[in-house]
Image (tube, rainbow, N blue to C red; front, side, top):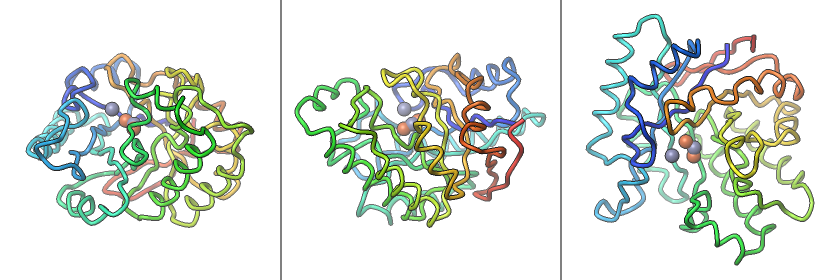
Length: 268
Ligand code: ZN
Ligand code: FE
Ligand code: FE
Ligand code: ZN
């Protein structure tokens, strides 16, 4: 049982496919435990400045929720979960909490996509890596990641080392940053996501890196899984790699979510 809990649809403005396209693809690939995680409306940006190419509008959020609930009703043989991917923005925790409390979510995936307003995973802004110190970028990213875990807002931490996306690596493997982050995850009781989108990025490696995953395992941090599909064809992409990776790190169970409660299931 490996869930695919991380799907984006055309509603995000930068992904394609309708919700039913994703369900059809899940059936085709034999996935039974799945979930939508469209990006939360950009609550930290004034409404008139929100980019419709990055996330759905605030008005669309209840429509999204309703559609997932309807799809679940129409497909009783699948476990279709209602999730959201939500950016952690320091100082704006209250606003996010107020949004999340309004809906019957199964899980919230917390992400870091910005360092002081720089969308570091956006290919259009990747030139900025050349202007900054890579070690400093990593420190800043991991510090936010720990704060996100400790915020208590999230059930799952998305793509834990997204900062490697374009293949920029620090001088030496950031083992101390992995250790600190794993400690923050363990302390706050949050689960991490093994996210196969890394395989499709220049990094060419699942998020998180094997060493990072091992650190998490050593401290008892649970894992769940997602493809971060932005196209229906990407549903379950790279999932053949997951059992081996989990086994290598010492995991025999994955976390499943319903109503923001976690239960564990065997990997196979
Ligand atoms: Zn996206
Ligand atoms: Fe993300
Ligand atoms: Fe995503
Ligand atoms: Zn993501």
